[in-house]
Image 1 (spheres, one colour):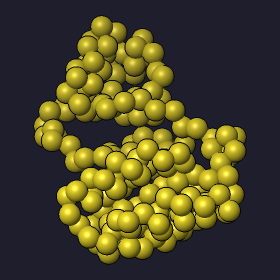
Image 2: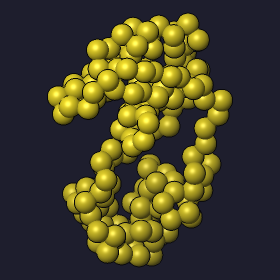
Image 3: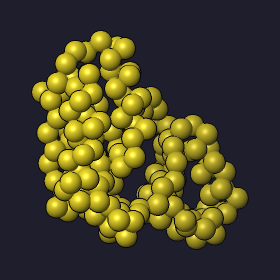
Length: 164
């Protein structure tokens, strides 16, 4: 995920209200959205489309129960690269993003270069993932997995969305 290039001033109070509602429930109907925001359905639709066209809304996603899909074990894997050339960074990022079980890839600052959020079937599956794809990758100098016991959604950027 890249840092947004959009100034906050490009989002007015109506856009913000739309964003909060869509962040809470991406399946909200235009009718319900318009009622909640206090605009005509056509205005709600136009505003939502404009937010997508401007790149403020980048997509709509479903929250999936990974345990129901046979991947109940989640981990954050901290990765340190051996070198920091553009080629190595691009190659590693491209490779890691394509691996099954990878939920998100964060390129971060500090001692760790990447945090990779993965879902696995069990501890052995996680071990095989780390050994096969990370510890043996030529760009990786160190990989350390931390199991995730629980994660919960926060209240959103403005602190007003229902975190449930």
